[in-house]
Every structure is written in C-alpha cells, then in structure tokens.
Amino acid sequence: MDHFADRLIERALQLNSRIIVGLDPEVERFPGVMRQRLRAEPCEERLEETLFTFNRLIIEATASVAVGYKPQAAFYEQYGTAGHVALRRTLMLLRDLHLPIILDGKRNDVAHTAKAYATAWLAPDHPLFGTPNPWRADAMTINGYLGADGVTPFLQTNPRAGLFILAKTSNPSSGDLQDLELSSGGSVADRMARLAAQWGQDSIGSHGYSNVGIVVGATYPQTAARLRQVAPHALFLMPGIGAQGGSLEAIAVAAGSGGVGAYAASSRGVIYPYQPEELSGSDWPALLSQRVAEAAETLRAAVMGVLTRS
Image 1 (tube, helix red, strand yellow):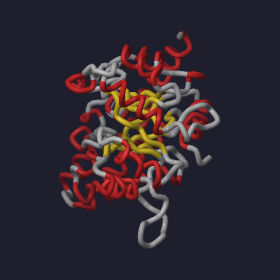
Image 2: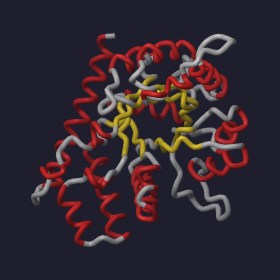
Image 3: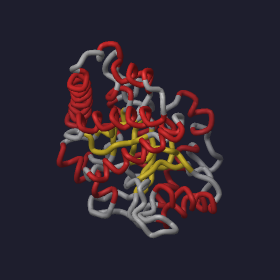
C-alpha cells in the first residue's frame, strides 16, 4: 500500500493497536551484559553491533503490537559513525519486515536545505546513482515554523510519504511559544494545525486521513481535543505517554473518525522496563524480550481500553 496514512491505519486495525514504539538507544540503560561486552571491547564495530542488536531485540519483541516504529535520529547521532551505521541497519531491517518507519528528526530549514533533508530521508532512490535509498523512512517529523516553502519540498520529494508537523509538543515549556494567542484568533499551535490541514488536503486516503499529520503531546489532552477539531483529517502522533506522564485520555479525545486518528508514541516506557543490572545472566536476551513485550502489550491494552470506553 503506497499511501502512508492508509497503510498505518490498516496495520492499526489488524493489530487492534494504536502504539508507536520509539527506538531511542541509550547505552547506559542497556542490559548489563551488553555494556560489559562493550567495555571489554570499546571500538566502533562493537558499539555498532550493540546498538543494532538492542534494536533488533526490541523490534522482535514488539512487532505483534507496534503499529510502527519511531527511531529518534539524535540517539544515533550522539554515537557518531557507529550510531549512523546502526540506524541504517535498523531502517533496512524494518523495511525488510514491512514495518512502518517514522524517522523522528524534526528537520527543516529554508527550501533549498529542506529539499536536501527530504531527499536524505524520504526519497525512494539515491539522488546520484538511482539505487534504492538505504536511509528512506515511510514518514518523518518536521518543523513547520518556516512556513510553506519549508514544507513543500517534503511534500514533493515523495508524495506517498507521511509527515508529522510539530504543533503542540509534549515538553513543559512548549507553551512559551505554542500557546501564545494570535490577534487573528487561536493559538500558535492552532495555526500550525490549520496549516498542516491545508498542506495535507490533497493527500487524504481511503480511511479519511491525510499523509500530513501533526505532533501533539499526550501531556496536553485539552489542546489535543481542540486540535482534532482544527485538523479533522490529520493523524496525530502523540508522544509523552510513560516517562513524561502523558494522559491516555488525550489519545481518546484525539482519536477522530473511526477511532484510528491518534497514536501513542512511547520510547522509554516500552524499551527500558528493567534495571540494567537485572539482565546480567546468560538468559538476558529472553528476559529482555519478555519484559519489553509485556510493557508494549500493557500499553496497547491500556490505550485500546480507553478508546473502547470513550
């Protein structure tokens, strides 16, 4: 299926799930065995393999409940070359498994640079050689605050891809700018949601949702409810569940038509449900998989429970 929103929704219905699993590797939080091996062999190759192996185990443990996966680029960039290679291998694995990928990089700049970002992460092929693009994601997060000329290159580079534009982010200080009231009415977040709705009006799929969605923190349920009215055809990517204390009710009020319009994005709450020293024995891979699978299923069941009651 070529249309990103339709593909994501079809998988959500198939799995009876609305969760997106973040792949945010932090080595200091890895199982004790993995960290011990890395300390014994502190080199780029071991680091790359450690990062990729952790991601592979997370993916295998959650594939039955995760609607998609959201690698956050910063968690790979911090580890230099090894991180970049591990990210590329992770993207290739997800594609091989036909699992939806949302690259979380919040990229953007002036149009010329935005085109380069879009080519790097969304173009199907390499810009020079015509070979398949190993970095390609199915969707990505972008900053829309440069306006239309910073968003158009992403829309044009791959019209089948998805975009999630920052509207109301989950962090505590998001209100410093996003909650400011405009003289024309509504907040900055409202205005961004309206723009996203305009940018996505030509890419509405068979389920009634556009390829242009918005990022709305689950930490702000009242705003989520309001933005759903502003952008009825936008998919909502909703971080903040778990470590940031977001509300499951926010998912329910943003679920939209058919109850398929909002997705809880969780990283730390799903991929680190243990203390590193607990996983120091020979059975650590199985124990890791069990803990992660349980955490993912618990979140899935909680989200679907709230949607069923709403």
